Image (cartoon, rainbow, N blue to C red; front, side, top):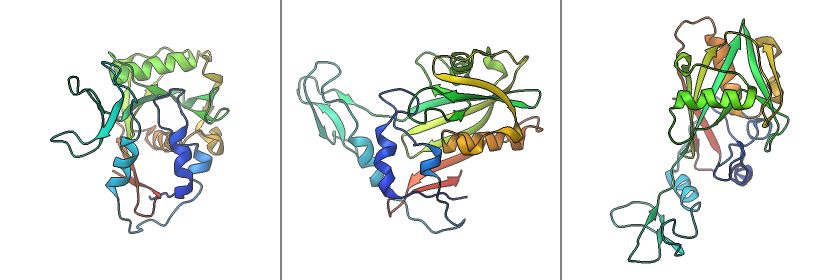
Length: 249
C-alpha cells in the first residue's frame, strides 16, 4: 500500500519532536500527514539526494571536541556533506545518523494498552508505549523501559517478540515489539495524561498520534492469534515530486 503527502507539509515534519527530544525529527501527526492515500501500484521515482540534503543540514554548529565552529563540507573519501571542525589540527567530523525508536504493544486478555500523549506534538492523541533507545541498553530493554516510564507497567524484556520494523526516510528506525502482560495493573507516567486497556474494536483509530502507531496496532491485531508473528517491514521515502512514499518492505 502506498501513502502520499504534499511537500508543503514536509517542513512541519522536520521541525517538531514526537518524543519530546531536541534531536528527534518528527514524522508528523497521523491526522495531518496521512489523510491522503494514493492508488496501489503508482509508479514513483525516488530521489536519494533529497534525503541527503535534509540530513546534512542538521548538525552541530560547533565542534563537539574543541568548540571551534564547524564547516559543512565533504570529507576526503566520503560522498556527502558533514559538519567538520574548522580547526585543521582537530578535524573532528560530526556524523549524523538515524535515531532508533523502540516500542511495545502490550496486551492483556485480548485488550491492548494505550497511552494518551501528555507532550507535544500530537498532545492528547493515543498510542502504544515507545521512545528513543538509550545508550547501554538493548532494543528489548529500551522497549521495556518505555513501557514502565509511560504506563507504569513492568515487562520482562526476554518476553518481547519483534513485531514490526519501520524505516522513516533515513531519519529514524523503529523496532516495535509485542508482549502479553501478566496483569492489568498500570499507572500513567509524566508523559501520559491517561492510560487504559481497550478491546481491539475500541481502539480510537482516528485519534492515534502517528501513522506508524496505526500500522503497528493493525499488524498486532492481525497477528494476535499467531504464535510467532510475521515481522512487518515498511519504508517511508521521498519521491521525485517531493511527496512521501510508504511501501511494504
